[in-house]
Structure formats: structure tokens, C-alpha cells
Length: 405
Image (cartoon, helix red, strand yellow):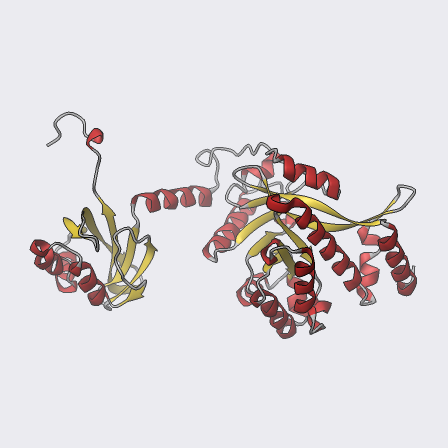
């Protein structure tokens, strides 16, 4: 079918209701409830036959006529979000790189969201790695404009191309959709599992939400338990708007049966669980290079009302901590945790320095806290490093057994 003839047929299909948006749910990986969806185009003729996307999307794309379908699906997604009201979830729509040339693209998005009265954050704009690779500067400028306008950016098919890491670095994305190719071996090989775990770790470090698409088997499910959302036939195929509305409004969760993370080889899953447990115990975790007089906080849940920058000079950080200590302990804390004393202790062979002290907050209340410094060495540097754990040691009376002394 020629491009112009096909375009006329597509327009007719839009007007007659043959062209429709179908929605494939994205399930919260821990709760099993729908947290989002991808809007996909379906052409269902009046006689019930379906024209597959692969039979018309490439032709439209080649002729530069795909944008009419993109905008149609985007509007359908907005209608669905509006119908869901307070049950609305994020719906993602794919826009190809040809839209980067349209200077009024963001304005058209704004017009859509305003017309349907929906929050911008619920309309997710999906782009693919190949789009950026083709016209990098132009596409990145376009994506930045979308991000600045308040829309969520999702990177689709991550890992299907050759420049994925560079792509993610350059694009202000919020969501990383992991390509189904990572699941091709059904997660049965060690190399495949390690690769997938590395992607999750990479996304976690960049604070990106992860969506794994193409999940079809329980074997695959066992090794993606560190992702945020799951999209695939294992839980749901793409469904019509009516069915999707029912699924969201009924809020019936699916059962997510993961393997015990301690019984398989999902190393990152275990490491992540370990880190989360450490965070629960230690609200403040600080890394310091006492040889270079510098520090940075790994975690800073400010439970003590300390006003301390996240990074800076170690000596200045210590001064701020000492100021909050009760008067009778200031001198000892300043001396014990000085860089000079820590360096001497390290050279004596000590592995840690620990003090428990009373701290006075801005409201005059006293808190009992522990300051624990552990010495660490780096194989490629002679500098002395310290990891500090600062936490409350207030305990309720009922935790003591017998007459502990």
C-alpha cells in the first residue's frame, strides 16, 4: 500500500473508530497493582480483522507521516487519564524523532493536557535510543524542552542499541524501560542474570524508575525483583480502554511470586536489601578522606536538626557537630574526632573510634547518640578514609532483658 493511500485509510479509521489505543498495564513489582501503562495503536476493521502495527507503522514512518498516529494515541491516552479521575496512573506514549523538528511540539502537549484537565506528570513521553543516535543534538534539545515543561521522559528499549550508556547520560530521563532482549535467555544463564542486575544497579544509582517489558515467564520474574514495574504477557496483554478502565477501577492486584533473594544468584537484590537495612539503622552515614580534609554524606536523614552541607571540609563538619554537643562533652568530641587524632589512631592499628554522647537540639531536648568512625583503606591510594555512622542510641525500657550491666 502506498504511503498517501495508507494515510487516507488511517484518517478514515480514526474517524470511524477502527483505529484505537490499547493499553498494556505496568504492574508495581512489589505490590502487584497497576502503576502505569503503555498506550499502543491497534487497527481493528469493522469485520473484526486486525491490521498489525508492523504492516502500517513502518510505511508511515518511512513517508514521514507517523506523527498523525502519535498525536491520535496521545489524545486517546489523555481521554483515558481523565476518565480514571482519582484512580489515574501514568500512561506513556511513543513519539518518534520526527517530532523534534516541530517547534510547537511542547505547546501541542500543553494544549492536550489543558483540554482534558489532566496533570502533566501523568502523560509520559517515550523516546528510543535510536532516535537520539540519529539526530543527537536536535533530539536532546527537544527532549530537554519536554522535560522543562514538566512532562515525564521515558527511555524505551534500553539496551537494544550500541550507545545506551551515553544515551542515558545525555537525556534528562525519569524512567528506564529495559528491552525484552535482556530476557531472551529466560534468565537461565549466569551471564544474562549478571548483565540484568548491572542494569538495575546502574538505573538505581541514577535514581531512574525501571520498567521491564516483555516479561512472559515465571523464570524471568524471579530475576527482576529489583525493578519498579513489570510489563508483559505474564500479567496482562494489551487491552481495550474499557477493559483497562475496569482493571484500574477494580484495583485487583496480581500475585507477584518472587523467589527468596537469598536462595538464588541475584546478588544485587541481596546487596540492595542489605543497604536498605543499613539505612534503617543509621540515618547519617558519612565518608571522609581525612588525609585530604574532605567529606561527603552517603545518607543524610537529618534526625538531629543539624545544618550540615552534604559535602565540604572535614574540619568544618566536625565544628558543626561539636556545636550541638552538650557543653561538658564538646572538648572530648573535638579532640577524639579531630583529623590529627584519627590519623594517629589509624597508625596505631586501631580499626574504629566510638563515642556515645548527649546532643542538644534546637528545642533544648537532649538525645543520646553514637558516633562510630571506621577506618578504611584504598588499594590505589595512601590516603586514610573514614566511614562514620551517626545514630540514636535511645532504647525503650522493654528492650532490656534482666539486669543488663
